[in-house]
Image (cartoon, rainbow over all chains, first blue to last red; front, top):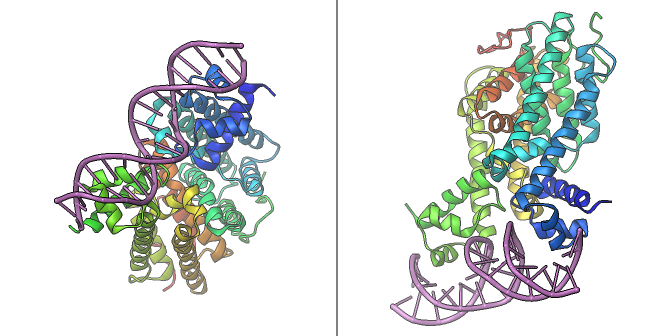
Length: 199
Length: 199
DNA sequence: GTCTATAGACCGATAGAC
DNA sequence: GTCTATCGGTCTATAGAC
């Protein structure tokens, strides 16, 4: 609708598809159907536009994850539900994608929202796993922090497998694989059901 | 030493640091200390140079992984040793990095070695885990394929955490987290010792 | 607000001298 | 083999008309 809005959305798409270096103002304008002068009227330039796009992407990621994290169910059930949701989406993590971009990470302003969002996700997962641990939901001996890091890493890395394989199958398998970790009792790797922990 | 050699090595470095789009022939020449004419004498152009660099990177990845995979020890011990080796290196996977580059994946010639190396790693891990499963080394109910995918994903994704955190701690934690999956019996998440499976 | 024109630098590549 | 010169194109941004 709004011109500025179209520009931000186009930037978000291109940032995801081609990264920061691979995304030119010209390409953004064309995708948004907006002229050059228009773009520089609404935004300072490429970094300014990128900041708006990155900030929004980071916030959306947090919002959609938090929705899963606060849904009904036990803590570990909610983590599992989140993972399965990501598995469905098959999209990969748009924030993690940004962390792979040298120019984004080199600029403190662009870097900040990326680092913050990833740290938030990691911390949130650790919190939920710690809660699950207290309830005996988590497999004994599992460290919530390390497990949260492993889950975050799987989420980031699965997209590499998806691109390499050209299908979403490895992503789904990887999520299944990490889901198997969570189960309090040894369970089938294809565990699509919430772990029946003592509620 | 050799001029062509220097060019390939510089390209490998820049491909890792800045990706394909972010790497210009000029930058490659400067890092290699080689002139423009020299580069175009030895290589067809940017794609040709990239192919040489990518091929070598993929081969080195396979060779170093295979060294771990054929080392003494039980199958699962060897997988664990490989993961711990990667944890030490703290570098992230240079092949997975390439799979994130749109221009690399868009070119079938450049894409091939990347896809092949990742598929090889995934398959090799699955083989070893399947062997470990038969020996009762693996936690019951774990699917070798899904677990191999999860491990591969962690390897690819940990680097995102490293860059985001600015330290290698999350990478190490993530590896520890995934190592905990392998144990036949519930073990401390900081399990640095090989799982004492029945040899 | 949006347009066109223009700028200076760099992109990837080629030509031709040495 | 390696050099310098040059090419047409794109990059990011600014200027100034409308």
